[in-house]
Length: 167
Image (tube, rainbow, N blue to C red; front, side):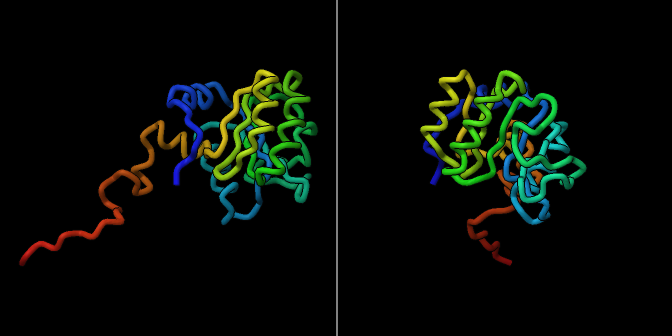
């Protein structure tokens, strides 16, 4: 089932084009976690991704120091990418709103399956753009015609049965 939230390609492209630094809340140091894959991919595309995870604060993930909270990150970042559950997205969004002007935050991006309408409304009221139930890694690849390297839309990998040719 697809996302009930509709974002135009131009909206998503503008966000991804105008963002250079992302604070990823819920980043994991475990190589087999989705947040690790997303962080690595986004770094490879030229983004600086700052991991936020209180459980491993002070350590590094993919060469970046991990912070316990958004407010502890020195410097500015344009996007908050929330890799936590929908309930946790509320307090994270509220922290982002509180520091948005000082830190330069313009976007709250909630990952696949993360939906918090109340938090989104508060963020929009504070002048922030909001994306829910989407992954910036997937959207970057889709909007930049990179999905075929993974077998998507390439015609090589398919769930359909191949018709056997008579010999």
